[in-house]
Image: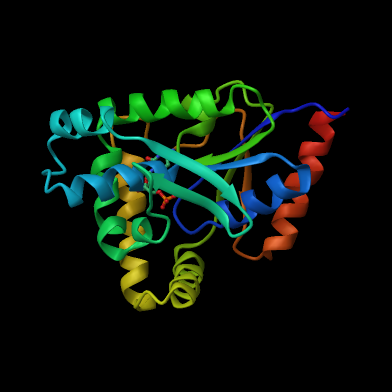
Length: 224
Ligand code: DC
């Protein structure tokens, strides 16, 4: 029997984490957990309830009374907030441009990190985010830090948005990605940094399949 390891994949927006993590999880019959979706879910509900997103106390009160459920499906991970399927709504431009603010609150991070650790407790997971290797799953058997150039990441987001029917331009996306990188890597609480024991994978010139194959090879070595 193969060992049910934990695979942590961190990196900036648009590096290909979720697409690649999903393929890796499927190939290994592991569970894929997109932690960014959890920060997005909190942002979405906070906005729905007209809570000021800099008010971490009210956001925490709200979160403590919220049920966030992640459910694997053939179309990818579905996200439910209090039973409502918000999988598409959490990808809107509005949520995307506000989520960094919510993700910067240490009290919100503490609650979500505990949930993430519980989800991964039995192993057999591929979890993607920004602080998975450095905070959430410090003992993960395989840690990958994935990145790509800002230009390439903007191009990928553009195609992704097109597929989802979300209007955007490459120029705006480049600016937005650069700003989000800055906010995510300069924030005080769990900034986006490469863990010392993580392997760096630059996906700028790699296809999705090539990147997934590299990770699968590393995972199989860890599971032997
Ligand atoms: O991966 P994403 O674009 O869906 O992430 C949404 C936001 O949440 C992004 O601004 C970074 C933040 N995030 C985080 O701070 N920690 C995580 N583990 C995952 C995402």
